[in-house]
Image (cartoon, rainbow, N blue to C red; front, top):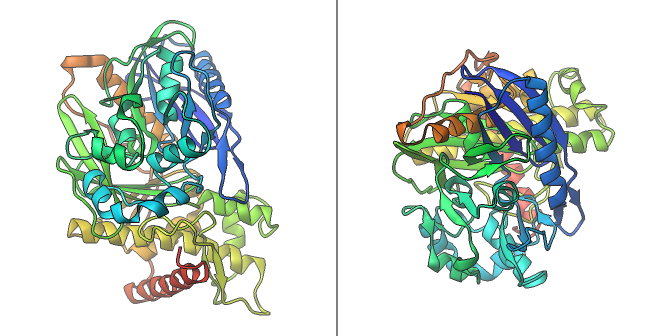
Length: 478
């Protein structure tokens, strides 16, 4: 069975064709171009998103040169737009998951913070879908339907009006225990449950599409990070992965029962397929690859390929500490208005010190997330599986293992998200004959063992915690 697996992401759409044994037979990528402004807006052109999905999918099939039997689609998760359900035409730009303008919505709902967390498992923050959906209703239009981009893309491909449960669990209006829309949460945001798409599982019959040439069933759906969790084989409670993309996203599988976090993490659905439902805890750093782009834009780094050469050209960060909160602080701080900071500058400071300190700050943010997950689970992580572009930085991965004090394993393929949604699509095509998930786990591309002593790691994390607290204070407390 050959699967066309599509990963529609923040800065591009990747499509690959995988064979029955999971081998990658063809790959294609199409860039997309978010636009950001100083007022916290980050928008995307819906037409460009759809065009990139179709172009990447067609190119991957052509390169594979095989018959494709089904399609799986992973999506950005918290990116939303308003569109006309009758015509399918977008009525607004898509507000990226990075867009912070819905802070004005969440600030007015502080009294509902605890209740929303109880219902949905999510902290109140403009990162999630519903605040941005409410912002669009208040500031753009009351016409049409307001949904995450996956519902619009699926409708454009198949005519169905659905969203998968993992994506819905990132909205702040899904009852996490029932895995169904919460009338109460929907009402808190002033939305209309009748305008929301049907919530479906991650594997099933979601219609057919001819967008890629031959008529193909769409049988796999998931939000990108949960798809990567499946792709990396984190199917047992306690197994964890982190994706280093535009941001850094750490997810820990928690099992068949939802577990709310006491430490500022999000609780979401990990997957829902015939014979298997699981939940996860997750946390996010909004800037990872974006911080490297910032370094290059500032002229501190020539290109991402030079990261390790520059970072290791100095023996340490020279007393510099960077809090890379260039788009606010996510979990476990939830300070959307926090700004980044650089501390410890002196006449001796060079660009290499700042580059090294930025990578150390990225690793520290992930370590903070891992510590929160360990406390919520009642036990430490035993290892961390990682994927994404920044895993090419051996310095960052080694420092990550040092701060975590556990091994870090780099996933053997750069396509974790697409491979995960391909697995879901295979289960969906099997239909009632499917029973749970089975993922073959290849040997890691690299494994990093901790080299730093525990006391030194703890001291570095304490220093980062102090710098983060000062960054929050300097920005008015978030």
